[in-house]
Image 1: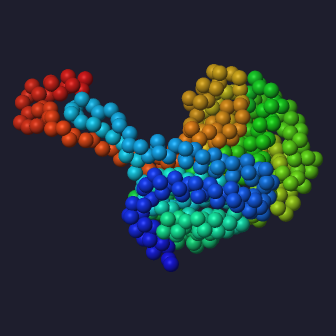
Image 2: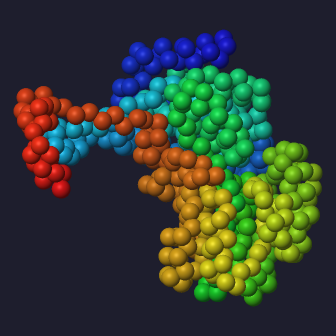
Image 3: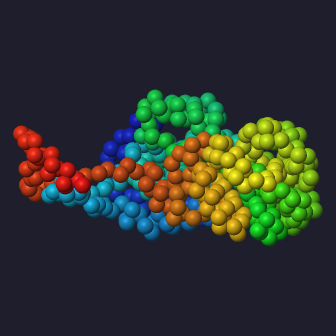
Length: 454
């Protein structure tokens, strides 16, 4: 079957109305949850083969996130689906108004390699909850996880409902060229632009979950040991291959040497004296990404780390990094942390404001004035104050980027809303009319209208 036939088959299945019922959606979510639990060890092994993740890190950052999302969706689905009555203005007297959450239809989910299980199944939960059919294109760089997902999903669902493809670039292009009702993409900004361009051909709405250079800002009001601990964790989990990892450090001038001492101590505490030999420290996903990261190390002075093996790169802290160097022009997406200093808060904020908007921002301070200044003046997708990456875990908030770092958000109820169209309906079944809307219109009638809308 070619891709066009598959999409047509999914559209036909969607038109049967089967996927829209509460019972069908809930049953699909429960089946998905049970399958994940049954294949838990297989999933953890696949993540270990693809990215060198320990079973604990794989469960913490991938499986547990998905299971919590599934629990939330199963518990609240009926409430999310419920038709909601909304207020009606006096000018529509007499009427009632409602919002219907309508599925888009057949959606495409394109997932990345860095969290290949979580970032495939997470959006799928939203698509299923909202009542869509789904075509999935997973990453070939995480081939073991992609193949396992293919096996799991093909055992669970017919292809007219959910279908996953696992091929490379040519298959991605072919799948993307079809006409969908919604596209959800997670990946690089460069590829995101291609996805958006293809979507524009059919006026297909998109969610783009991208990345960017997310700063971690530190001032002199904080305990630097705690700051270093949390930055080291957020930066080096998954060997830095995390879209919301702190990309670089902006630390108040004079604090950098103390921070480096603490950061080095925490790196050793987490991963031992030889981190690259630690089973808890993941590998770089491919030779291509490994070579790119090694080349970036050359644009600074490694004060911690800097060495590498064929598959791993040591947790690395860089100083003497020029703001215009290549490492500061692209998202690092690996275990390298450039350290830059600032001594003028307003200048630091100004420089952040003129950069492309990052996916995340991390501010370490007890200074409430600084906190409010940064939060009110700097644009970013989301933030965690006095820690890193934790805002991702709160499904009561939408997660997503802005500008260069993406558009749209998801998680929890927001995943359901992302894959739904809020359809507004005004019911004027009661035959009561306000006379002034009908012609002819005497000159004095505009005065009456102005009083109503005052």
